[in-house]
Length: 369
Image 1 (tube, one colour):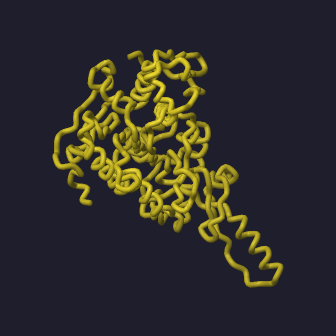
Image 2 (cartoon, rainbow, N blue to C red):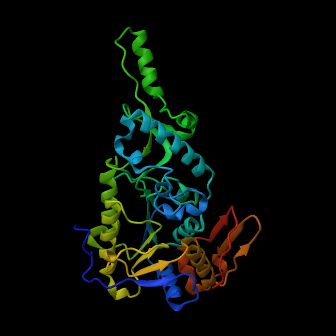
Image 3 (cartoon, rainbow, N blue to C red):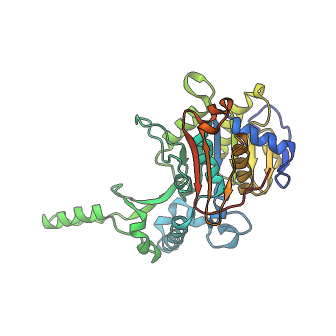
C-alpha cells in the first residue's frame, strides 16, 4: 500500500472536536459511538502513559526532543557498539524503574472498562511499559498454533519485562538484572554459562557465552513474532470467513511515524469506513497535536485535548448510562456497576457478568458531563 495516499475513496478533512467543551453535542456523540462499538480496535502510543510519569519521545518534553535519548540508540545495530550499548543499558534501567513504579492512567482504565462491558476487540500498543497489563487487560503476543484465546492487548514493540539471550534464546526477568544494566553492562546468559562450565569439566574447547538483551523491538529489527502479529491484524480486520469484525478505530497518543503502525491504521480505517451504513465517526484520532492533511480521509475526527480527560469523560458517560455514581475519594476511586441495579434494556452491556468493577489505586478527577 502507498501510505502517501488515503486508504479511503475521498480526502474529506477530518472534523476537529475540541475536548475543552465536553458538553458539546459532537463530543457526546463520539463518546456514544465508542461505547456502542461492537468491535472497537485501539492503537495507542507513548502519549497515553505520559501522565503516569513515563516520558514519550517526540513531544516538547520527549526523550528525543530534550536529548535525553538519541534515536540512533534505538537502532538494531546498537548492541554491536560497546559505547552505545552501555548508554542504552543505563537508559533502559532507568525506564524499567519508572515503568515498575507507574500506575495505569485513566486511559488504561477506560480500556479495561470497555473490555469488561464487551465491545473492545483489541488494543495494539506501541508501549513497553506494561500498563495495559497492570490495568487488567489480558496481555501478550498471539501464537497461531495455540489453543489459548488471543490476548486483548498486544505489545507491538516488546516490553521491558524480560531479557533474552542473543545466542540460545534463554529468557530471564529483567528486574533480576536491572542493577547490571544500570552500570552500562549486558548480563551474561546463565544458561550459556552453565553449559560452558560443563564443557570445561569435559575438557572441551571454550566457547563465548551469550549476553542477555531486553526483549524490545528496535528500529530496523524484525519482530520475532511478526508473522503472528500480521495474521492477528488481518483477522481482526476481516474476521472469520471474510466477515468484517472491526467497526470503530481509535488511535491515541501516537504521532504515527513508524511504517508498520501506519500500515495497520490504514488497514483498519479501510475496514471501518466500509461500514458507512452504521453512520457517525468510524475512525478517530485522539491527541493534542494535529496530523498533516495526508491523513484526511483516513480519520473522520481529530479530538484535540488531553486524552486522559477524554478517558475520564468516557468512564463517566458509561456510568451515567446506568445512573450510577462515581465516588472520588482522597486515595482511590471506585466504580462499581451491578447487574441488579441496571434497567433490563441495559443489561446487555454486562455480557452476562454480575458487575463491572474498576478500582483505581490513585485518585483522579472525572469532569462532570
